[in-house]
Structure formats: C-alpha cells, structure tokens
Image 1 (cartoon, rainbow, N blue to C red):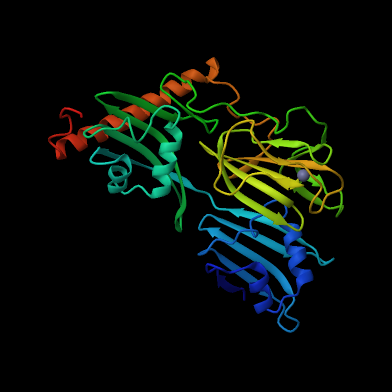
Image 2: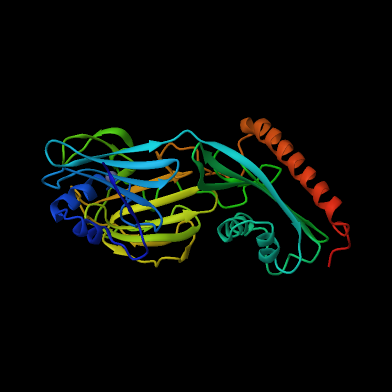
Length: 369
Ligand SMILES: [Zn+2]
C-alpha cells in the first residue's frame, strides 16, 4: 500500500525522506529523475506525496506527487537503482463562467465581490496592463465582464483556470481582451495586448547542442528520457535574457538543474533558464523582454557550458524554437476568421451576462463618474 504524505508549509523533501528512513542516495536518484520537471524542487502545501516502500528493507520503489485531481507525477525505481518519471494527466474539460459587475470602489474590490480569486483578478489586470491603468482609468459605474474557464476532471476542479475574455466599458473606457489559440491575448481587432516574445534568450544565436526531444537518449545516463527544453552551447558568463515581459516566479539551486530561474509571462507562458552561473534578479521582480536576468553557466549535472531553455504553454513544455508563440504584434491574416468567430461568441456570452446584471441592478447603465 502506498502511504500518503500531505505536504505542510515548511516541509522539505530531505526532511520528509529522512522521516521515512529513505537515504540521501535514493533522494538524489529521485531528484535526478525530476531534473526535467523540477516538480519536487518547490513543494506546495496541500499537495500529496505517495510513498511505495519495500516491506522489509523500506527501499523506495516509487514516489508519486499528486499536483491536483487531474495530474499526478510518478517516479519509479528502475533495476539499476535510478528513477524515471511519468506524468499521469486525466482527461479534462473546461467549464465556462461569466463574472460581471459594475464598479463600486476599486476594480479589485468590485471583481472580488463577484467571486473571482485574487490570483484571477491579478491575471486580468496583467492582461490589460499595457492598455489600462487600473488606478486611474476605472470609475464608478463602469462595467466589466470576465469570461473564465475552470478545468474539471471527474474528481472535481483541478484548480487550473484561464481567462477567455475581458471587457471593460465606461464613460471614458472601452477595452477588451480575447485569448487566442497561441496562448496570447488580443483585442477584438486581433492586435496583441502584450509585447511579442523573443525566440531565443540570448543576444546572439548560439549553436543548439541538444534540441527539444520527447525521446532523447540522455548523454549521461544513456537512457531514453525526454528533454523538455533546448540546450544552447555558450561560454560560461554569457548574458541570459528574459524572452518576454513577466515576473520572476522561481529561483532555485537544484543538484541536477543547477542554478535556475523561472519567469511567468502574461497569457499562459512560462520560461525556465537552467545551469546558470549567476542569477541577477530576485523572486517577484518584474522583468521585461530582452532584459538581462542571469549569466549562463555549467552548474548542476551538465556535460559542458550551456544554457537549457524551456518554454511552457498552459503548463506544458513545448519546443521553444518551433512553438506557435506570439512573435508578431498581430494575429496572422490566415488565423483571423477563426479568431473573429471566437470573439463573436464571447461577446454574445458577455452581452447576455450584462443584460442579466442590468435586470438585477437598475443603475447599471447610470452615468459614469
Ligand atoms: Zn537541457
């Protein structure tokens, strides 16, 4: 039987492993398997670990991390004592809801009253931050609608949400945002609301020493294992640039990934930069596209000086060199018919919600301040 360990604030992997009498060598073997995911590097309170240990020896046979009801990561011991990982993703569907209200007080206070979480409100503000000053431009009686989808599996909500559309309307305000299939937000005319991404995290184009590959033969372990980023060979000390505007969400020092940085970008993008020699930003710091955030290095398990660069779209790693990411400021002409249809559908959803709000709130169309 697997034994469950619900992660509490302050728990560390080494602390949990030592309480379960699992030795450091085994923990390092698990961390090696986690190098591509870094899922165990930051333990989230409320997530659950499941330990399967041999009855007599107590040897760790498998470890599973339940991230949310739709996602579990399994680390399994192989005959040679090393571990491999496998992700178990449950089929999910997205359930759409509309949150709408008239501004009373701040945007935050009004949005909060509709039931949106702090994280969702912050996300909405980030999506429109290039166009709207949420302190200055929003006034009493302005209207907003947010179409939000929640990911559901049979066991319930996974906790993953995404904003599909936002509309702000007022006496001096008319802004909207729509999520496109590339993970970026555009106004109704297909113009990007945030700046495009750089394709590569360096000033110059360095040689790709190992491409993104879901079935790579690992250079050190000689086993088939996914390589969820792209490696660029470059001298230690090469400036590493954030490929997009964003916020530094994680800084780590991992025995295999080395010193690394994770940046969250508006929309549904995340980037990671591994094996760094020097981190030049702090957690929570805002960075802009092309800003220097680190110097490349050779830290962790590495066969030579290089930068391992990852791009995640909707929490899934993709090939940064070929992924459909916003590198231009407008949706390509051939994608516009599909985008326009989607905008029309979402506008209708928001119009309906506005009528509903109006029928319950007689002053909904009153003069804006
Ligand atoms: Zn790599």
